[in-house]
Each structure stands twice: as structure tokens, then as C-alpha cells.
Length: 279
Image 1 (cartoon, rainbow, N blue to C red):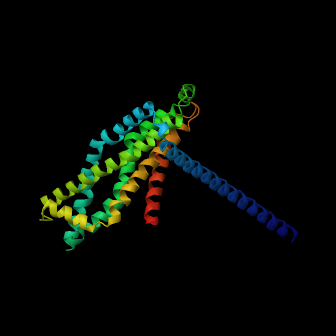
Image 2 (tube, rainbow, N blue to C red):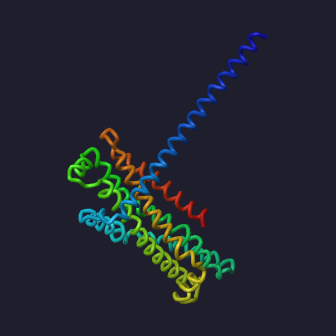
């Protein structure tokens, strides 16, 4: 009896110890995640406050902002248009095809608005921004500490936040609207051309445009653009925070890209989910 009692007591003690270790790991992970979230939100608020100051926009900052806006909005047009062609062929034409098969072509407008305008375009915009400009930001800012750029900015009296982070955040946000517009137009045009060529629809492109516009609510002219702006801002902050988080050369530069992708993807889906739940 004493041996069985000792065995049961040992098992109970071991179970309690494992449970404590599990709860400790969950608690530490939760606290660490909340700390990172709060730091991320504080960085976002600081960037917005700095951007609203007129004194921030010195000539070097304006030049950096123009360079980044050109990189985000202009140099990515070819990639955006190609993505729109693929999405238009794969999504819009297929949606029209299956709606035609079921005899519900009248739902083409609502289906396109729900799938494309409200959901898919903002997510694709975030991924395009990361692939085209976010990786460059990760590599550039990943060397800021190791090569002494931040120290050089401080010696010259330049604010690293205003010089490195703020222009990228605003350029990504404004550029996301341009990318979203190009992506949406190229997708709809490709989808219409494919569906018309296959004989799935017989009306003109003006009627197709009116069909999509009539399916849109007034909020669809505000919420999706605002979602794209926020996603662009969030992707920029994720890339900047990840790049500037590299403090020593022991942390390999190649690791920043997958790390930044995961954080940017989480930011994209978090913003998209927040808008879907809030609206």
C-alpha cells in the first residue's frame, strides 16, 4: 500500500510539474506576443505623429519619400498588371463560367464585388508590396545597425525614424492605393475579355462595368481603399521593424526575408480580419 501511495504521489507531482511548465511557457509566449504587439502599435502611432509634423518633411526626407513612392507605385506596375491578368483569368472568368452554367449570371456583379473588391485585392496588394519593395526594405534596414548608418544619422542631426521608417510607411500606404487600382482594373478587364471570348457573356464592357458598379455599396468606395492603405502601412512597419531589429552580424541577413514575410503576412491578415469584423 505504501509503495502504491508513493507511486501515485510521484505521478501526481510529475503531472503538476509538467502542467506548471506548460502554463509557464504559454504565459511567457503570451506576454512576449503582447509586448511585441504593443511595441508595434506604439511604433505605428509614433510614425503617424511624426508624419503630421511639418518640420519633419525636410528636403532629405522628401527626396527619400519620392524615391520610395516611385519604387512602390511606378516600378511595380508591370508586376501588378501581370498579377491582374492571372487573377482575371483564374477568378473572374471562372466565376462567370460557373454562374453561367447554373443560370445565375445576374449574380456576376455581387460575386465579383465580394470576392475581388472586398477581400482578394487588399490581400494581393499587401503581398505585392512585400515582394516588390518590402524585401528591399528588409535588406537596406538590416544593415543600418551593423554598418553604423543610425549612428551616422545621429551625428548629422537627422532623426532615423523620420529618415528611414516614416517615408517608407507613408510611401507604402499611398502606393498601395495605386497598386490596388491597377490590379482591380487589369483583373476586371482580363476577366471580361476572357468571358466574352468564350461566349459566356454577350453584353458590352460598359454594361459589365455598370453591372459591377451597381453591385457596390457606398461603403465599397471607402472601406476597401482604406483597407489597402492600412495594409500598405502595416507591411512597411513590419519590414522596418524586422530590418532594424538586426543588431549584430551574427544574425544572418538571409533570415530577415522569411522572418519579415511571416510578420507581414500576419499583419495583412490581421488588418483584413479587423476590417471585416468591424464593418
